[in-house]
Image (cartoon, rainbow, N blue to C red; front, side, top):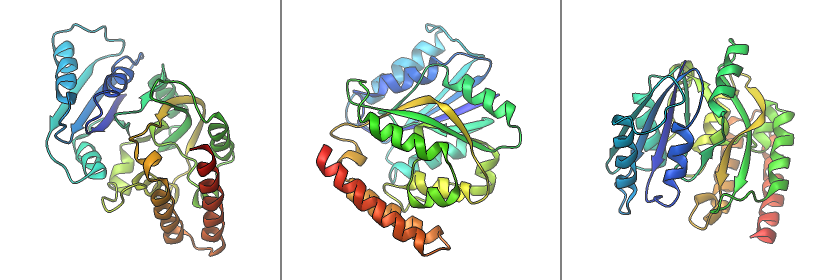
Length: 267
């Protein structure tokens, strides 16, 4: 199989090497197509990308898979969803995912993903566990991780309408999803991933991998950390949009109120 990973990046030079290395260090019987879309960063992100591009082209890195092709460019975009959609349009892999430039994959994630798709040939997407880490790569908010894992272990579409327990960096899908579901909604600022899961979940049941596939980073400049109230408002609107039962958005709003209260306590 070929696995396409897309990384949208803008002024994340501090975390970007960890993200890149988590992709290109994956070991297994697959090819990697890695597409990095930089939004014209003003820090040294471009130099970092060029360094890894040069190392790969000059065979200076130990490749542990069947080959890695790095594609990248740096230009102004219309936001995160637009950058990711640009990557989707270039993707040629059998399996596709995106990971933001401050998150990173766990070891052997791509092998686990490939094996699960082989074992479940009729399933078009999968999602797994994801740790929450701080800027020093230390696990934090472990109880939130356990809470989301509980929801994931008891997956249903109605539960997904009540709360977004699917972790974006731990979610992968077959290329066919792009043909049937399409691209991300570029009008969304915070919940383009949640919208995508709801669109996919309406048609297809996911495979749930009960292992950690990735690490989601919370830091002072992360969107979720800075503007979580706006994020919850946006995801409630999505629950209303996709729900047929009026009780579900009500439950979603109650759940959001509780989560916001908890966030105020822990932040």
